[in-house]
Image 1 (cartoon, rainbow over the protein chains, first blue to last red):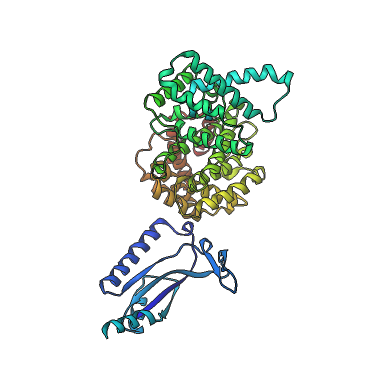
Image 2: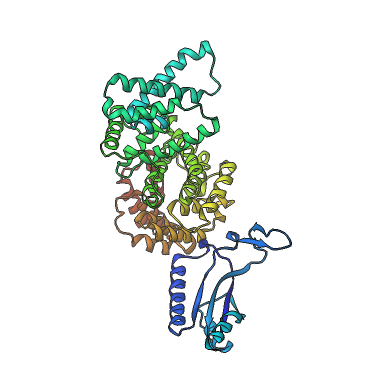
Length: 125
Length: 393
């Protein structure tokens, strides 16, 4: 089953870190992603640009309304995510614990598995 | 003039035609009154003069295409002022990329840009660049010849060529700015006006290429630097170090604009050296006093600078910033690890300063003496000699 590992972190500008820290971080994350892929658990993932670069669509009775932002109200934001395909929550947790972070937190949520599994069932029958 | 250069592909023809148009204006405007759109009037008259001249010279064969183009322009109804301004901006943009083609030597790029886009006469360019009039004229002629001989096109480079072409333009503008900014107090006023000219050209470039963060970064860097102009020299015309400058003399308006631009440039990351330098200048501008300077932030920014545009001078600047937050010993270690800057005066004054702070007076004195061997300008010489006397006490 699929889980989303959502990275909730304080937004930091490139000016707040040194290039060496960034390089170390990228290398460690690359290693972690390679291990995920090797184990066949990688579905997709990536980092997000700062929240101010985002756009929001609001739905209602009329035409959907597009607005700039959202602009940060809290320091911690959705900053990146992984989708992993594993057997159970325990396995997802085991992977999450191996993410090379020294701060931040990661929220783990099972994906609604309607479509894909129904399709597979239909194919089998 | 940029329009005519584009159409005729000939700097000299365009220049002469524009000059003739001004002469006509001088003759007519006092009697007939100034036309409602003087710029368009000049362009129209210059265009007609260019057509006449091409015809007179009778070298029609290779000029037919140009002539047709000019005739077509003449046939066009008078454009609305707004539209015309847009076209002029486009022509200036094309021309700046031609004048600053990387195949031209930087001195030639500077002279040609000031002449063609800055509206300076050749003698003015020569005075501004402290070069002789004949050498400057020759430099400009050679550059024009090279452009013609190599058929360097009058066009804005395609997006994929931009990374190669834009740095040559930005380096030219920054050099023009610094020629004006670093001019000693006794230099002619025209030299300090170069900074204003560079800023004006860079503003135009930002308006034309709003998606290039480095253009924005360069403008921010120029504004934040120019903001310190009044505090840069003391009454005797001697250089005042950043840490000793009276910050009340800094131009708040330029700083505010520079800060905003530097933020905009930095939003997409450390995209280039001008953006990073603009953020360093911003860090200084945001410190209410020298003591409140965030040196850790500046040292990090220099680390980014080293990362994206490595070089010994950048390493030296980084070492100086590190010395401010991690102590002179660390800074000295970094300076002594730099290769290939032994002939660079600021390395020796920086080194001497750190040795002085470490109470290693004899070594400091030796470094100051080494600096004196490297032809400091009069202001620098007075400063170094004063420090040397203190170190030798």
